[in-house]
Length: 87
Image (tube, rainbow, N blue to C red):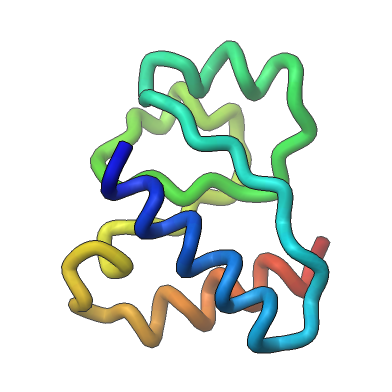
């Protein structure tokens, strides 16, 4: 859950820095995602590892790994910003 906390905090920062409302974030284990998608309205998913496509039910996925590694973080931040603005 440490890596997901890093990603969650960064997503909140992106929203705040751009004057967007704080997003509602669910931090889950991969094994919990499929059930959570059945009971929650989710705009996009930001996994910090490899999440199987059949679990995402067609919801937009943005890799959160760059928030942990720092590699391609700017590109990922822009993807998250676009997704936040869409919703």
